[in-house]
Amino acid sequence: MERRRRRAVDLLNQDESPTDIARILGVRRNSLYRWHSQARFGPNGLAAKPHPGPTPRLNDDQLIHLEDLLLEGATAHGWHNELWTAVRVAELIRRHFGISFHPEHVRKILKRRLH
Image (cartoon, rainbow, N blue to C red; front, side):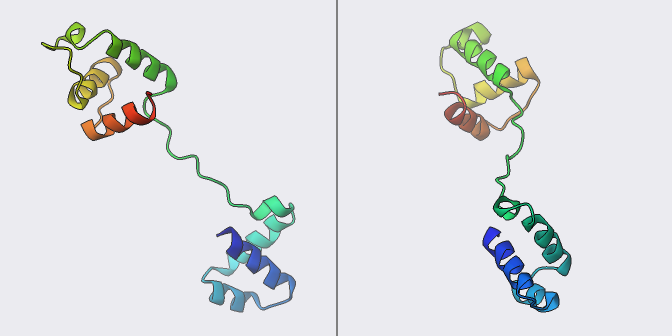
């Protein structure tokens, strides 16, 4: 995407037709003009900006609290043995934080955010 924006600006600076550039690159003319304006802010004006992604539903403080809850053991939370399963952790999260997660997503949370 960044390369296409830079190419479009280069072509505009070479006095190529905006209509032709838009057709060739598969974009709207409005985008060309916007990119041309952004290019005036220097080389970073057209740089690709990473998307931060969605805000996690469990924040960092809640994760720390979840870890403490898990360390208390499963029997402390009403299960008959100490085995933590994704289903049990999902239920623990629902009980303590009011947030429902699919067990597969709980596995991802445990693997990626609690290490």
